[in-house]
Length: 229
Image (cartoon, rainbow, N blue to C red):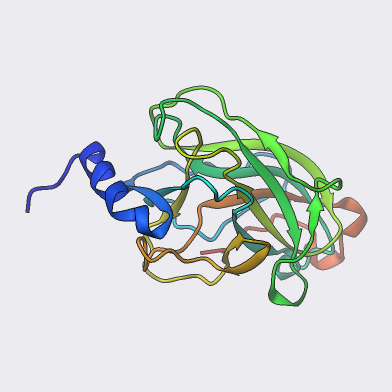
């Protein structure tokens, strides 16, 4: 079978996605995942497998729509965690050939469903625009350096600007839904899913965390590596 080039595939996928209110570009693209930098207890939390399947942007009118992943540092026997970095997989060259920026936020995850925004404390999300190369699909990092008051939280990003003046987020190529990715639309959170990209549903958002020294317990001393996928 003849394989379409990424840009031809993007046009075909975009045309097919209008009815579903999303525009998607095909994958997969390999990426290199680095060890999280920092002290012995520094850990990168993730649910994706590191291989992109789809890049996604929403059509106009879909502002205040967020995609995110839930995490639970109590599985590492941590009482609290300092969130050092927010990471997401994206590309500046698509759909408009430049970085535009997104909004980032952390939400409460009490009761197994995302709740109110924890950070920024004033609400509304933190605006962040990547810099550097727009050509490659890359992991983009935003420094956070914030101590989360809960052990369970959701790390999420909002498209913020209307298509095509926006930056995409990504889904990995694992056909098994890990059941930790979420979508917020019209003020309501639901498990992530798009009819045009199913069965791929795992959002490529990660966080780099460090133990809060005030919350260290004897069982959490030493180097801990999380298995989150």
